[in-house]
Length: 309
Image (cartoon, rainbow, N blue to C red):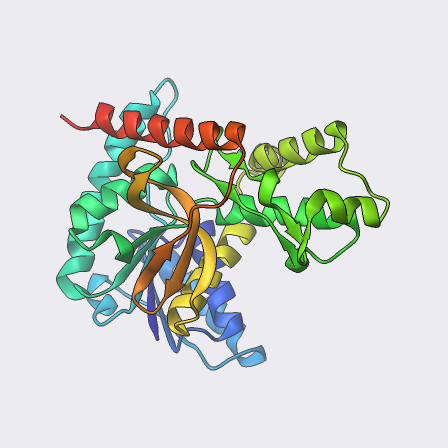
C-alpha cells in the first residue's frame, strides 16, 4: 500500500514513523510546503526502517502522491492572536481547497484521512472539496479520545486497555460524550467488572476519568507544546484497518446523519475496511448520553452553517 502524508510537522511525521515501524505501508511519501522539512523527516524515519520493516520512505511534491491508496492530511495554519475560531476555520478551509485539489489531480481514487484540527469540521470541508463519497473521507475523530478513555479505565481496573471496550462519541472537542453506559471490560459491564475486582467506579473516579479524557490535550500542550504521538499511532491504526480490509470497529468521523442532525461529521463507532467506512453503528446509550450526542452533532452542524456563505 502506498500512503501519502501532506503536512510533515509533528502529527504528520509521527504518523509516518508509526506506519514505518509497523510496516503497514510498502511506500510512504511525505509532502510539505517546506520541502526541506519533508526531506528531513523522511530521511529520519527511513533511518528507523532497518530496525522494523521494509517500508520505502521518501519525500516529494504532490506529483509523488500519484497512485496513493490513502493520503493523510495533517496540514493547516495556526491561530493568530485575537483571531476568532471561525476566521481560523476560514483560513484552514482555503488551505484545504488548495491541498485537496492538488491531491485529487494525481490520486483521484484515494481515501483521505483527515488529522487537521478542528478535525470534524475539516473532515466536512474535505468531503465537500474532494467530492469523494463520504465513506472515503475519514476524520481521525475521537479515536484518540477513545484510546485515552480505555487507558484510564484500564489503569483504574488494573487490566490492559486493549481489554476495555468503551467509546467516546460526537465532537473531538469539549462537547464529546463518554459512553459509560455501554462500556465493557472483556464481556462484562464496566460497573460489574469494577465491583468484581474491588475497584468501584465511584462518582469521584468517573469525574477524574472524564476530566482525564477531556483535558488530556491541554495538559500535554502545557507540558510540551503539542500532542502528536498518540494521534500518530491512531492514524496508523486507521490505515492498517484499510490496508488489511480488517473490518475493524473504530471511532472515526465521517459525514452522515446523526440522531436527526443531517449531513454532519462527528464520531460514531464505524467499521473500516479497504473501501473506507463500510458501516456505522449506533450504540445503546442512556438518555443523557443520547441527548449529549445529539447536542454535539448539532453544535458541529451550526459551525458548518456559520462557515457557509
